[in-house]
Length: 474
Image 1 (cartoon, rainbow, N blue to C red):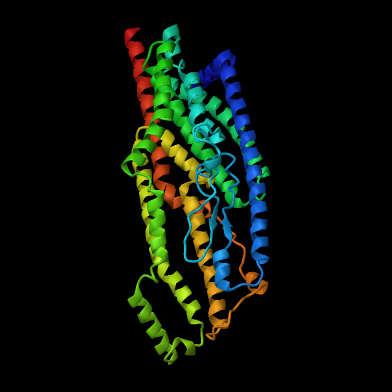
Image 2 (cartoon, rainbow, N blue to C red; image 1 turned 90 degrees about the horizontal axis):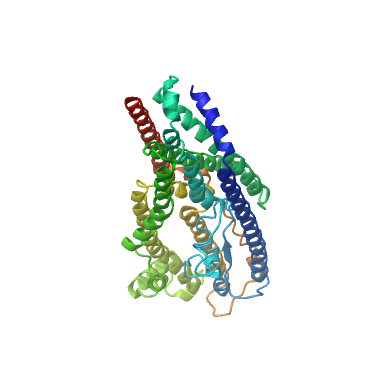
């Protein structure tokens, strides 16, 4: 009997002209978001490639100069693009695209694309992930609003019960019809999105990208299944199509629109964004750690003299000025880490606040998993900036050591040439694989699965109760 209900509901839904029109609108919006995403990623790839070539050319052609001057001249580390940013760009527009690897200073990432997009750009970003997380549930709710309420309003529910259909069979049939239609359309759309994401990426497609695509498919599938179950349960609470749809429209506004925004606002209210000037001041103070501690400078100098068995810095086998530069770099590292660790703790606190709101709507959890699996969330940005900082330390150490061991202490100006500049390797960051990063998302995966279980239990209990009520009133 369940299969008969599935076939009947699918036939009814296929005949709904309004459903066809709304589905066409969603697909057109999806196509528009895909075209916009392809255009933006292609522009980003071209700009990044041009910037990398220019950066290297300027570095290699800087001429002869003191290695420490070259350390201040510096280079940029550019963030690699995620092949799945076409589906969910996540925080890409609001996180910096490059890090300047200069001496004495751990710079934050710069060049945020949102700065060029205007104030309204953050609210009008049309992406496939946005449509799947926000627009698709509305379509599901409209499709399912009459699933049971319509049967009760038309009196066909009693006819089905009279034919021997049980409450459990009725539930399985209704759920199966909603899932089959939803997943058919979603799977087709996702396959198209995946093909474009993989075919338009400039880099070679790696196994991790395929794994991430599978992960995205699972997350969105579970999310849409939750929407189907919730819609089915709410429909069973009402006796008319109109009442069920109005209720589901309210659920959609609350769960897909208001609560996600409220979670972000509450998070930043309880844990405010750090003041940029204050952070800049802390970073400057960290860079002066060595030079502001005269006693430490004296101890380090005396330790170095004793180590080499000489009385003055002029007798040292290394250039003392270069030695001081390298020591200042090494002593600043813990201070830089302290500043950035404090920022990371604040952002984590904002995320934890949002997680409490995830108990009220699955949209927040699904969105976080979408960004994480696509490789466009804050954690992947942090991995990039960490890699850039490690590269900066290697770069500065290379330059300082050349200065230290080759300049001498005779006050003769020392310069290096392109032979030294060529020793510094280009920055190439390999983002963590999904397997390596999965531990950060376990809680969210479990929460989304809990939402699915709760939605199914809710729908089943409400539908079975509605069927029993019809039997008693018959």
